Image 1 (tube, rainbow, N blue to C red):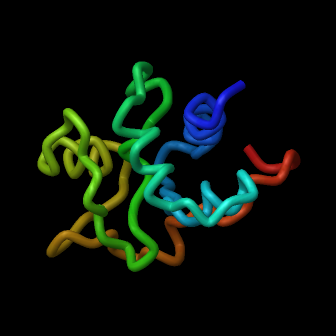
Image 2 (image 1 turned 90 degrees about the vertical axis):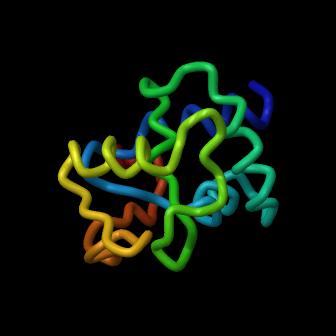
Length: 106
């Protein structure tokens, strides 16, 4: 499995109604290449099954990545899952964030 496929596999583990960060995905893969995670998400061939819209910046903002998806579409998908976005940031970011990608979490 190459790097991109590993990123997409982790995305599939983000529960509906939750988000994670580019940083957390990178760290789970043993790297600090946060931007590389964004590039992998940009190439995601399996959205929304590998829900890249659930990946945001560490400060709770939507992040620079939108790939083929406009930011309004990312916001709409998140809201449909119960994640509110206000002024470009995830509301209640700490409560909505998945931190661990250990094998026991799903």
